[in-house]
Length: 309
Image (tube, rainbow, N blue to C red; front, side, top):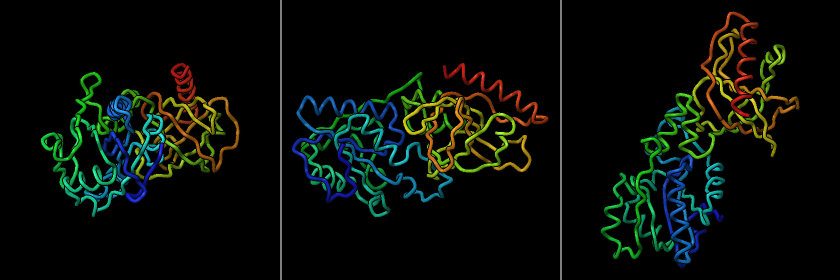
């Protein structure tokens, strides 16, 4: 996959089959669009192009703090997922305040036609673009001949009557329903963190943990609780259980993300690990003491191993 980060880098294609959007999460709805893109490109001897934006448009338009909006995928994660999906050309447009003022007509002329050479444009059922989201399927369809490219809309995709969307994934993760999130995404939700020093209490009670520091503050962290997870370290996959929260049994504990990796005793400090969320186990609890906590951790481990097997 070729990646372009500036309009000057893109050389106009003879037969571009194009889609555009934020593609946060690159979920099953997004991949339905990409699959159709690839199908058309194969039929018409064209090349697939995905136009996406970074940072997330809402960060620029609404100007919230980083606490108000969280993304499902970092830019690097998005690039990796789109490459895995089989996209040939990825055009990342820096989303600035100035770009947000671009009219839908100018976006069509300057980006889709003059820069890319679009012959077919494929969009999702609710796709809007241009200043104040003024452009959409109806206006594009009405002006197909004028623009010189064909427009196709992909209908809404549902799972169990729930629309597949980035918002639906965020809502699921916000209540810890990582299984529902995975159903919408088509893969387990993941976090990447750097292993940092903690209080090392886990070692003393027989459950050593790696404390994770998430590098990208915009990345969404699932709800507080205990999860069965898989852990990718370099190219090796391990099983484990993870806690997100304030460790209410431990006095003066700060909010943390800690993972206990089963059957593992190597030094991970300052290394990066990737967490794949498989299933929610329970909410955080305050126990009478360490003995009660250890007994619950044993039950958590047993349940996690059963789930992950």
